[in-house]
Image (tube, rainbow, N blue to C red; front, side, top):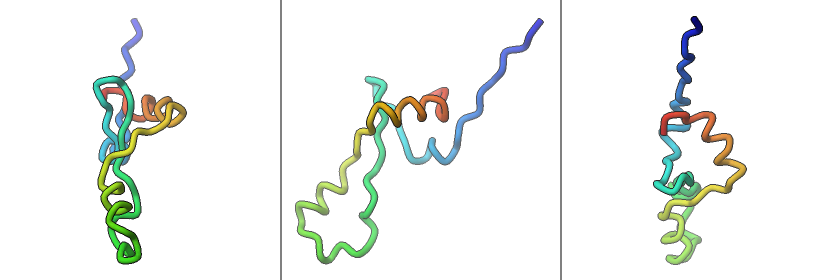
Length: 68
């Protein structure tokens, strides 16, 4: 009798990405921490929002985060 193989979750990805109820993945934008004095307010405000990732990245993230 073969045992069912449990998949491991990639912990680095689980801290950076979340799955939405529709099955898409979201992540925080980069470039927020420092060197923002030259940016205008609109650019900084836009960086605060989460970013929806493309489908080609979602395929890979489904493998890394099997139980999300």
